[in-house]
Length: 244
Image (cartoon, rainbow, N blue to C red; front, side, top):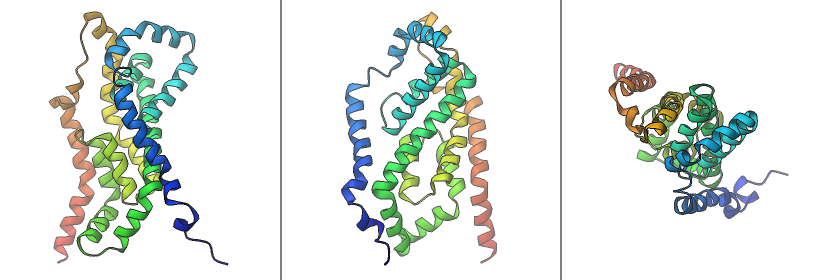
């Protein structure tokens, strides 16, 4: 007796429930939490947060990672503020480790929801397709590592998009997780270091410079990493032309 196909084992709507939950949570979060997970909220509660951290360091660290992961997994507003908070509470290190770990866990959550709801079926259709659709799928498959690192390193690519696209083109979970963890380190390190200096910013009554990542001394090294990530694709393209 053969196994039933996966599509027949599980109701399509049941498979899509996690993705539907993400969409609903994102919509509700955008409406109800936009003022709760904000820089102003962090500034107003900074003393209480620091006191709680001092009294319960391990619990604070675990709670922070869980909350940050949920913010990312459900695409709630405030991911940047959470990164700043990681630096503010735990300094640049281990704050950056907590930030990267939490963001990766959350990214895996939304990736899995999208893959379960749409990704496998869409990837199968692209695999069976012809012409332009098939060429796009083949191009992504041939350069998965480079593409995954590029979408993480380029600051202009929204984190939500970088989580969804790989799920919809059949990227393996392990490859997605590794490239996410390593690829977000540069940006996370920048914002965590900004968060680590929030004490002085609060004292001056100012707001942090979140555009620092686009300043030349920060952006140029990140663009250098982007070029390094794209190098295998360039070399493959050059070799392909020489083979013609």
